[in-house]
Image: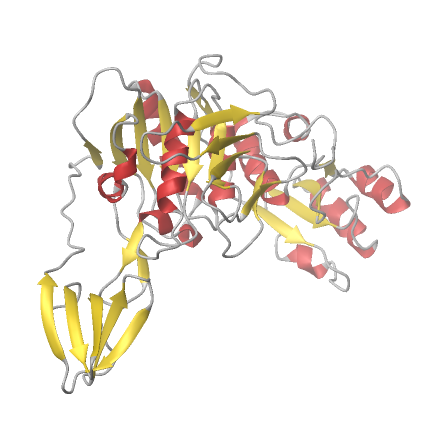
Length: 419
């Protein structure tokens, strides 16, 4: 009997069935039940039968280049599944009993049989990390991998990613790549071993979105608490607004770009869009993956002194998350002017979830403009940071680039959520 075995345990007239987990004491067994909950059972007088050995020991089909594939079926589109890790590609780590990222793309195909028959798949592993460990260097590796998959003939790309930093990675790819096919980021809030997991529906809907006509970078996640549809958010406008709900993501300032109605079995999975988008084949494939990583995001709060800026004074670029229309304490303005005079690009965004920066209304804003601050329009602060990293490395006029929509990160006008 080993950790990872499926077991049947009887003790004191009670019966339990599940997967054996590590135990912190030799006196107890710990079993993960089908419900997703763990139960501790005293070993004394317990009868244990092993039903299946090492049920999570899945042999990877990945080749030396980190790629995998399954048998192709004529007439189906080819979707590339790229794994970076995260909860959608995670299961129980039987060393610790914790959830950890350990599946490659081929394992995800085996774990989500509902994907069968929807497309032909190519699998590729770029990273196997939890998303809090994501770095700009991995963004670059990811952009190059997506470029190569599309160049090799993929009709769409699905990126499996941890949800905590998915919005940053989606923004980075949106700026680094011009794409003629859909690039869809998806993940899950709850791991596959939990009965409330959202991994199957999100994966299926992401594949359907990758087969659609919308050749943009999208984030595909649950649209509600129910298993009925996924929302399709523009990668540069998406934000994770809840720590644990399955419908954690929202499009800031508007409703999502589209939806995928989820259907199981032989039912049709309908993909629809409510606004204009870049269509499949309109753009030529291109990549500009250079990034200036010396960019910082600083949040102003009441009582925070301008010394906060001293810690980032040597940065190439700074995003400030200001109040309201884009303000900071007036004591900051002189320090900001000194940074700009020394060659640092400073972009102002707002802490508000909706609306846009306008530093022409109040004296503080006008003083910031006179100091040389660049207005970030209605960009999300995180998106603005990623865009500034890209702009500094790839364009000649940072200020003009930051004010110009590149990948849907700036809207023409701020509208109500109903639109």
